[in-house]
Image (cartoon, rainbow, N blue to C red; front, side, top):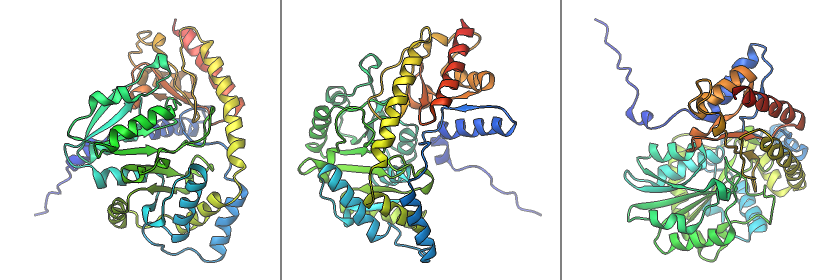
Length: 397
């Protein structure tokens, strides 16, 4: 008699959800495959090509047969390049022993939470938050403690908002500045206040620096540059956005050596090393010319100004001005409750189905009246898409 297969999915998988940003991309792609003209504001991905010097470094790696395994935590060369670039940009003093290379910034954050969070540990996460934060904490058995920010104040976060949520179970605070999805930038003085709250209590402060070079005001800054910060600050970084290398999948962590060792142990049994060729390209990105970064920022600034102006022209729509990154986070609450649209998930689905514009619903980021619009696309696409959104919302009235 044939054995009956046990097909039940592991309970821990039920603790996480499908990435909303990935789902939007898949839904948009499905329509495109049917010949539909979709304007895609969903993907958080620069539309600029990877700079030529970086691509040529990858070509050389292939030609020189640098196509084998590397150390599971990355090459010594790339770790050194990461430390050098972070020191030059932010004045930090990390060593290669405090650096790990992973398969993108998301992988760094996943490995960090799995290495540090025990069941019942609390992790403070400001709202709105990037979709993955909640799920990786849940997967580790931790408890998410959400801190609401004020839309009227540009989603600004302060130490005073965080302090009442600190308990004996608080293990980590997770900060993303500039923020995905809101574009909010944490004031430097407030960042330092939060650091002092955490460091004196032995709480880890995880700073996701994915968009750190895309600031519209002031200079890039890392909280890890403070004296003594390396003991409790955890840096998650990536070359994906800064150098338009999303598909190359290279991220890095700058963390205490013991934490790097724990992450390496986990990584050695999951992905092993990041792609050898991509690591060579990342070395060139970090050590080569940096002129592509301000060029992209200047273009993002023009796009931001256009997008915010156009959104605010739509009756009933409000939108805080992003201070960094390349996202707008408009409040479309005026459209809810009309023609059967009860939430931003339904709003986004209807917008895609009828107006053929892809956006990410605010529920994915912890709010209920917003959608995320990525303006990392051409001005032509921005104009087409915003025309459609304007017409779609007006037609709901």
